[in-house]
Image 1 (cartoon, rainbow, N blue to C red):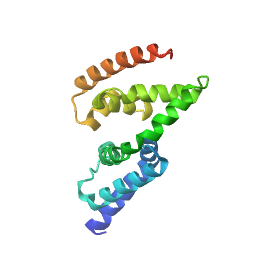
Image 2: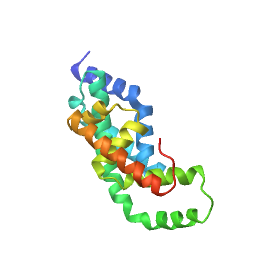
Image 3: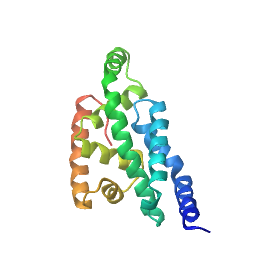
Image 4: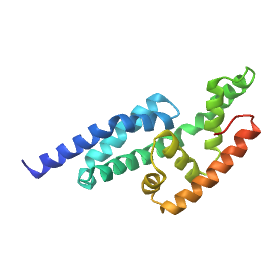
Length: 170
């Protein structure tokens, strides 16, 4: 088997092993489901183009895949924020009705979005994507103790913000 064929097999295996989690990660962060699919496609294209950079160890390969997708998602969401006026109108309309599970989720998502970027992404990685704080720190390129401090600050801010809106925090 040629070196290129072996590398292609490794890339395909790494993607197959992580594809569902990558798609879920993208869908939770995208402003639109179509953006999630596009971002995932763009990220996979980058991974294939740079296949020599994909680590051989499975956990390191997983972290690399999430890192590439994270950067693509940041770019995608930055360009989509310009259309946030429609989201604001929807939020006003939803406030007129009694609280629903959707509204509670919107409040939580808004509270997370109001955090500093590094804290918000850490909370998303831990609570939405199931990473440990140490793994999230590695993905974000920060020291685990820094991540723990940021996480504690984020949690305190979220508790305060959500309590002000009458939402229970556990």
